[in-house]
Image 1: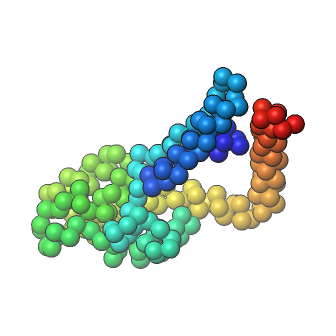
Image 2: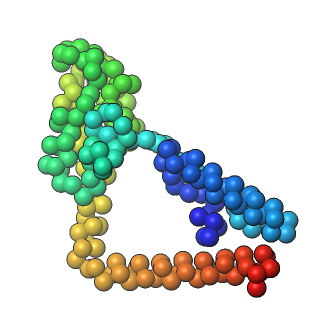
Length: 194
């Protein structure tokens, strides 16, 4: 992060404390070697509005190692096979019981994937027992599909032209290398190592 002078770093809520170490290093290095300026910015966390997406089991955040995820490249059928049995409001026993979206993991997923008007409609349908949990999951599937179809399409295009991927990666690596080399020249010069 410091090597590239990052001022905003996209991290998960559970990674913010790790970012603090780089902030401490930047602060101390600047105090010792930056000659009155902030050569290294103190990176700030860039958190998404939906900071933590819970897994389909409703127990912990989505994690590939826990097997409670929705893969970005999974098919509609694969996603539905995971959504259908996913944990919902534990207090909602019968279809006619009003739900409690604030404790329902499917509602949290709606907040992450669905447009605001859909989230509002889901809330109303749930709290009035207008929908059952399966109905809510079907609407969630549509919202997830809206987000993932363009990603799947782009992934398919890239798979057809792997040389483009290689070219972009090589160009990005070259640009990063140039920035890193300049930063290291500056650091060595300011520390009196050159």
